[in-house]
Image (cartoon, rainbow, N blue to C red; front, side, top):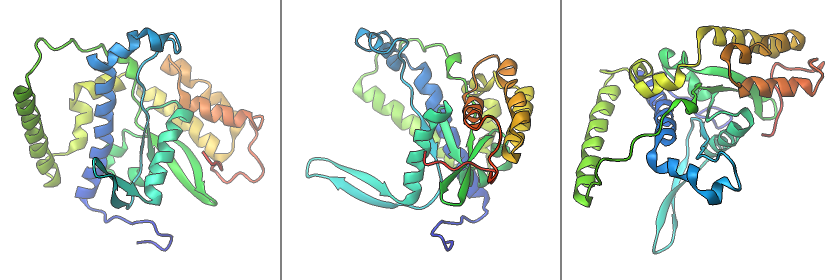
Amino acid sequence: ELPNGDMELKKLERVSQIADMAVLSFLKIISKSNKSFALSKYRDMEVLTNRMPNYRVRIGYGLHVGWSIEGAIGSDFKIDASYLSPHVNMAARLEGGTKMYGIPLLVSGPLVDIMTPHGQSYMRHIDIITVSPNNPMSLYTCDVDINVFEIEAPPARMLNKQQKKVKRFRERMARDILKEKVMNNEYQVSTLYESDKDLQLMRSPFKKDFYQAFEKGFKLYIDGNWTEAKIELDKIEMIKKQPDYPSRTILDFMQEHNFKAPSDWKHYRETNA
């Protein structure tokens, strides 16, 4: 444990694999929820679309790493597990930050730091902010386009209770076998970025020239050269051919200062978000 109460994880392959699995798990949740036949029915509910045109189920996820205390809460009729720690609170703050950056997944720098190099290569560095006074933290995302999916066809036949139970059992067994291979370093889970069809489809709009342009503009922003940063970041959506909300968030912040870095700019921005 570090002096400030943070936790330092050992540099083990197993730890890095678990970090990769955490990110990939949420990416799979994002893909499944956006092509789900059951969830798609909410898009056609008049009670929702009358109040919120073009309504669809959208969920933001924040990922962080650290310790927590587990405890049971509830009553005699229902008990749930609850987790308490500053790191759990940080994950909740990151979840809220997905709205500000317009992305479904926001990942902390400490978690990215322990991922495998291959897993890290799929993460985009989108900002550096303070999480407490004089304590900056990098923010990352894994870029995905949730609008690429077609809704799955409804099931051809409904499974009865026993069939559903068998199906869940088989799926759980398959996951456990894969997890054991990952934990024994017999399988690199980050190779799913290249082999999983859903991940490939969600990431297909994001090309090398897009990342090169953003990295150049982001570096200028961090270095305090905001005039040049604006020029580079303004090109992003022309390259991407669709909105890029992390770029817009940085541009909006710089615009508040007339695209001139403050004299006390510390290469990160202070925020309570």
